[in-house]
Length: 363
View 1 (tube, rainbow, N blue to C red):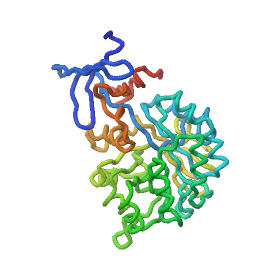
View 2: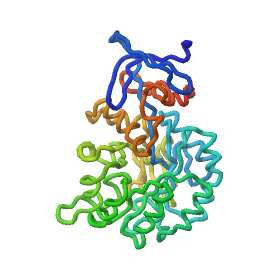
View 3: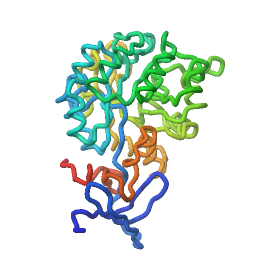
């Protein structure tokens, strides 16, 4: 093994940390612990983002070239596994956006598949989604999966016909998440008895944890095993993230990033809305609703550390738990025979280097 296939530093996994050397090609060949306490690098598993709409001016709904470019942007910020995410739209427009997706996926090993956010959501809980909601349709899904590998779908369980539709999705091996929903606790509990259910951008765009009228958040905190959460210091408070982390063993961070991420402050378009990017947030101009985020996963990691999460907990939240949710057995951990996807940080947790399948990504 030569020097270009070795990197040294403090290696952080979800359950351990030590100073050592990683020997690698496409996969990790060996790891050796060092006796010395000195290190310059902090090495963590490559970040996994299962909910991302865009970045650097590119939006998944603009088609294949934009999907590639937004994924490259987030890769440079340490996201070595990404789930491009649609927003509520017509079948025709969604197919147009995802046409050629499977070819893109085969050429870009960091692209995992598609997360469909909508269109089967509650029109009274749109957030920044356009009002193009539909009733559950297996035909819609069957046409989408002809062109794209759908891994996750966000839906509202209270919509008529949803229980049968959820069974259809599960039979297609598509993960079901509750989001953009006003369901009550009983509705959620009934479905959760039969299926593993995730939760989309926990706390946001869902019925809450009211002590007399428990909703989706109550179901997530009391019965959920997995949920995604935005950790941009805007969407959810530190205290609420800590509560969710205590209650949900498989909590994982997502960006929910949109095309305005990486761009200058100003006015842009997202999901048929005029939005304004200002002071690290994006809002719909007409009513001030948050329109996704502009955070990246490397900044998310720093945010978690600033919230007093340990390095190991931050790794769980930014890679390991998401890998467990998707049942991926080759990423999310730095260990022998795992894919050589890792991120190198300095001692202040600033991004230094990104490795994808053992190859260093150009900044």
